[in-house]
Length: 279
Image 1 (tube, rainbow, N blue to C red):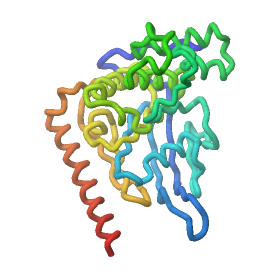
Image 2 (image 1 turned 90 degrees about the vertical axis):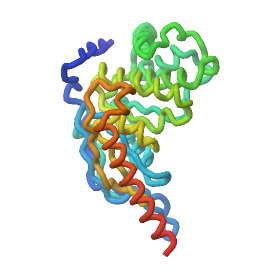
Image 3 (image 1 turned 45 degrees about the horizontal axis):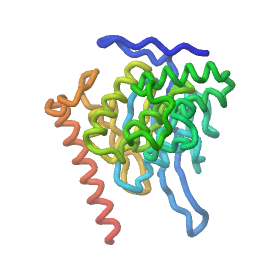
Image 4 (image 1 turned 120 degrees about the vertical axis):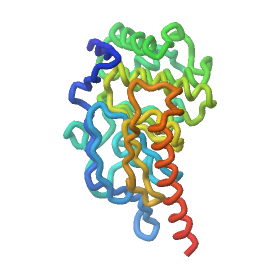
């Protein structure tokens, strides 16, 4: 059984171990055929460095989740290629953990068994898988709830189980598709801070899809804004905020500047898309 990486101390660089590089090279994604064909993602190229936290922002239907699913291996590009650590993505794999907006836990399994499921499928013994599950449940503050079932937990707690489950295979990349979208505002803020602490300790690459500008600016090293469909990346914004982050940073000038820049890009793109739809 692998040991959990040592926590990174505040003020020191995080070490991703050099793993978790994502290359999206000339990717387009088309659904359907012939007259029914729909281009969800227009030719897009992107490099995400190991250990980066990247948020993808854009209007509904712009292809954010589709692009994320291509990195996960659930969607095959029409053209181009996705690579993780120089290995072409052909299907889902344990090097990429996925967290969805809907918690998608197995309701007939306990919290601990949900988290242990991945390691068991990867060949760990029940004892090893249980130890891994306990480690990650402790990391997300839920170790004492291991014997509960998902329906006995709040939404925020279920999502923490989902994050623990995604991390239990020790992936180099964590993919998150609007994971906090169904949570109330206060729980969402707590979950954002909790996620940043996990990311800081684990040194993992995160690709996070959201509709929320404030969430993107607060979390990300880079905010990638996509155009209206067909989606393509039209802006790469890097908030000049220090790490570690806390919610009181929303009053800082760099936060306000990045937030305003995001809103201006999205507003201009929304106006352009609206004008084109009315031609």
